[in-house]
Image 1 (spheres, rainbow, N blue to C red):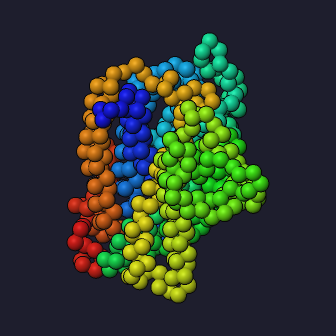
Image 2: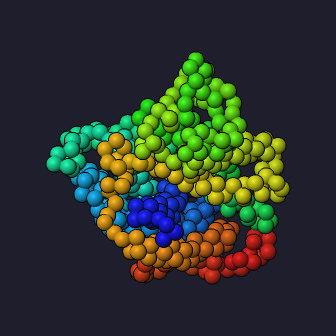
Image 3: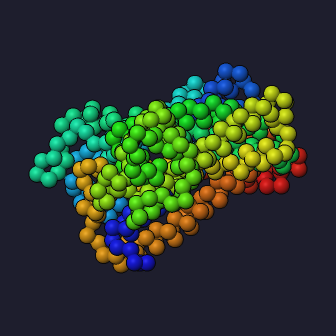
Length: 479
């Protein structure tokens, strides 16, 4: 298929499925914690706007959660189908970690999700709030185990290799491997930031359509506060993560920076833009800032770090890809910081909710968190190549013995099915976002009968068709 071998096709297939999947857990983590905040504020302050926002976003959460579960199951099967040699070699570590995720996080989420979605009129306020907290806690525990497994593949420790297989000898060392704390905090913060931008874009869309209701204003205000507070924290975590990566995966850093070789006695420049050429072993058309690379990565103007030329060609990641994916992530991060600072200025002037370029910018920035998250994952995973377990097992030795025909057909099937299924689910979720939160009292709201038993989780979602027309001033044309 396009001249690609089995290894490349298996990598593309897993990269495609995980790229689709990771979007949903990121929004799930952020929305679950957002729902905890909304319900907590409603219980504390008693304002109906928080309750309406909770009901509005809980329906979107249900759709997103369902798509995340379905897309995640596929990846688990791929470990056995496309990467059987890796499963045989390292399954004694990755298998238990994924099992812990199911037994703790998934069971916790599934156990309390029904109470959270269907128990609003059936259980007391305290129990319902507890259920919401447990669902949010489950999403965070899930990210803990998944990131522990993935981080071990980047910075493996706590194991021995016996008879050609990995055997865990220290589970604490396996889980708390050197890169795990940085990757976990970086991912969790990215999920919060991506959700804040998503929520802010939804509110901006309604404000631009003159739906200037109290719930819309509150969700926009909360989203902008989250952006301005979390973005600098994420930049700091990213810097610490970069220093940790330099210590344990210097080839990845060299590839991200397009840095090939050091000059004696000179600091390393920061290459803003360029075109890394893997064959010529240089970065063409480089636009550089002298010594800034040294300052960022060594915190010294004269510090140096290894270049790609210091590593054998077979141990170098593809610098061209990770060079640009890293810059996409950083560039979007700077735009997020600009959005947050602009929101502070608009809030100070009392024009935060007025239509104009600021709201349009917030709307356009809606998907930026997810795009940056994907760019970050491309950087860290492609930057680990050619290793599937850094320094322990090469990716070429991990792939199953499948023909290119079989992998080509399955890849095409995956692409078609994913675009149909998750495209339809995403379209429905965006329709829910466009319908907007309800304004006013519970009058006219469909209420669940105490003896009713929902047939499926998505039956808890109140779709646009369930909403009465509230007039043009609230964006009612889509309700």
